[in-house]
Every structure is written in structure tokens, then in C-alpha cells.
Image (cartoon, rainbow, N blue to C red; front, side, top):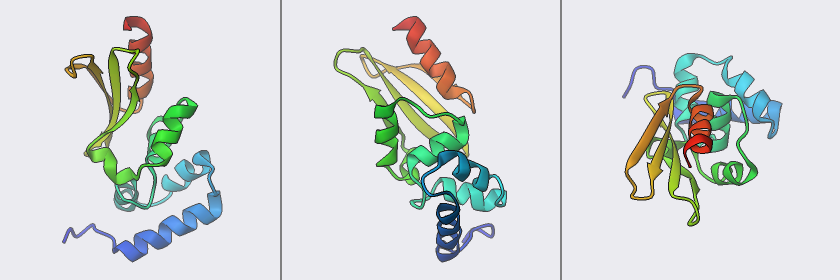
Length: 137
């Protein structure tokens, strides 16, 4: 067991306190996450206690378009280590995938052949990815 690991019940209690204080307000959730210890925050951001939208908002401090937000709302944060497809449209020759790898947000752009076209990392990754798509697709 990781010495920095918080028991799941305790993480659940912390998450409940966050939600009681914030309801569904992503700005509030992000601010409250900033107040917990780094270890607890990292565990929450990769758990099933938060959804992928809450993690997206925490890292990028912005909301994506409505369709992307809905996709993220219905996926647990724990899936972000494998990636969640944000955009894949039959009419468009790309796919955008949001990952969190070792606590760093990452947005990957795949081309129509499912080959990595670009990888953007850090808190500006989503902005850079959307700019890339506007300029190149």
C-alpha cells in the first residue's frame, strides 16, 4: 500500500464535503480541490469519486463545448488514465482524446488513420489542441 494513500472511505467523505459545498459548480469544485493536500487531490483526480468533467475543469479552468462536457460528465475520472475521446465525427478527419498521465493533463489529436498527429500537455493543452484543429483541419 502506498504510504501516501488515503483510505477510500476517507476520500469518499472528502468528496462528499466538496459536493455539499459546491453542488455541480465546477469553479467551486476546482477551488475546493486546491485546498486539500496534494496527495488527496491527486487521488481524487484519478478516482471514481469525481467525473471526467470535474477533472477537465480542474486542469484547464474552462468548460468545453456542450457535447464534450456531456461526454465527460458521464465518465468517471478513473478512465482518464486510458483516455476519453472528446471528438470523433464521421465528417471530420480527426479525433481528440483527453488523458491524465502522472498528474499531467494531455490532449492527443489522432488523424483519420488513427495516427498521432499532435500531443499537447499541461494546463494549456486543451487550448492548444483546439487552436491546432482550427488551423489545420
